[in-house]
Image: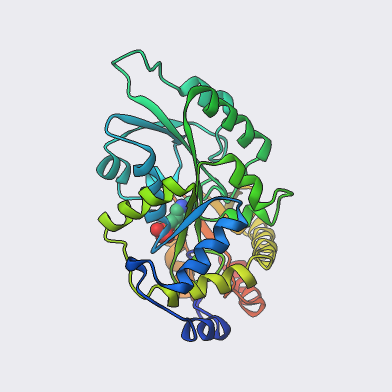
Length: 341
Ligand SMILES: *Cc1c(COP(=O)(O)O)cnc(C)c1O
């Protein structure tokens, strides 16, 4: 048995999700007449109390569309140094938006309103790029799945408003944060100018992300999506999986979080573990003792059927998801507790 904890993207559609996909009513979404895509976009927009949404193939695309829609040549986006938009999107901020980035040194990937305030350039000084956008990530992948305190987000919003900046959320794992927080999706919709959410992470859809915003923003986004080659035809089959995911797979994320905490408890007893980041959601990042290299640990685990990823020197990441069973958890405990040098 292979235990695949490389990411929460490795899940395969369940029988019920596949049935929803097979029976979807579809049309040509580039002509705007795929009914299932429309249902999904409307559903998501309403859920967050935002005006409109656009369904796209990936979270990288929804983020990059949002950045391009907000930014312009010579603008600057402010974000944490560990942001997905900066580290893991192929340098898209430069190539797609011709913009500069100001990286902040947050706490587990979370930046504060004071840091943002101090990072805004004087727009009268022609030497400096024009501060235009702040981008947050919640949960924060490289921060070990950490969750933003919503009151800090509100303070960041105030700083943005005072200085004429827009606020974007990379919410690839926003539902992981929502199930652990008192806030509702609509609270997020009120604060952010644009929100990207992924259906293909913890929610278990095979493909797809949504970008939310006001009508004009989404209209602009539709044009950008086309230029990125992201206009798709009978996408309703995939939208049906997304609708199924939103209806059925949100609340169960808590189980992924409980599983991640259990893995943390097991790792704490293992001799090869030096330190573990706090586990707030479905991501477990731990540091290896000096006796081990990253490559050695990845190989050792792989030989025992456990797939995970290296996340920097001496760092390993496990991500729990809906295809990770209790049987796999038991087996994982056996594997981990047997690893010794
Ligand atoms: C996965 C992820 C994305 C988008 O990834 P895609 O693989 O392009 O869908 C964006 N932001 C974060 C934080 C992610 O974890």
